[in-house]
Image (cartoon, rainbow, N blue to C red):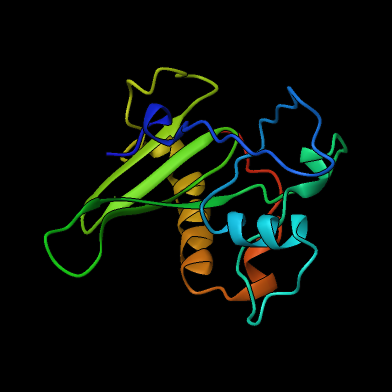
Length: 154
C-alpha cells in the first residue's frame, strides 16, 4: 500500500549551476526526471514529455509546480499497478478495484486512519478520483497543471 514512507525517496542531483547543499521539498516523480535532465543539459527532447522540469528549484529559485501527483505502486500479478492514486500536500488517495484508501495528513500525519469510507470525506474522495482519472490519461503539458485547493472534510 502507498504511504508517505514509501514515497519519500531521496534524490540527489549534481550538475552545472546547482549549488552544493541545495534542498527542495517539491513532490517530484519519475516522469519529472527526463524534463529536468534535458533542461540541465540544455537539449530539446525528441518527443513530448509528461513531466515538469524542477531545474529552477535546483538552481535556488522558486517555481510553480503541480499540486497533485499521480502515484502508482504494487504488483497486481498481471499487467499493471496494484494501486493507482494521487497525492497532494494534504491527502493521499488510491484505489485497487473496490479496495481504497484516503489519508488526511493534516489530521493524521502517521496515516493510521483510512478515511476512504468516512462520510465526511466523500466530496474529497470524489475530487481526488477526478484528479486520478485526469492524470492517468494526460499527455505532455496537460500533466503539469494545478487543480487548486481541496475543501476541508465536512
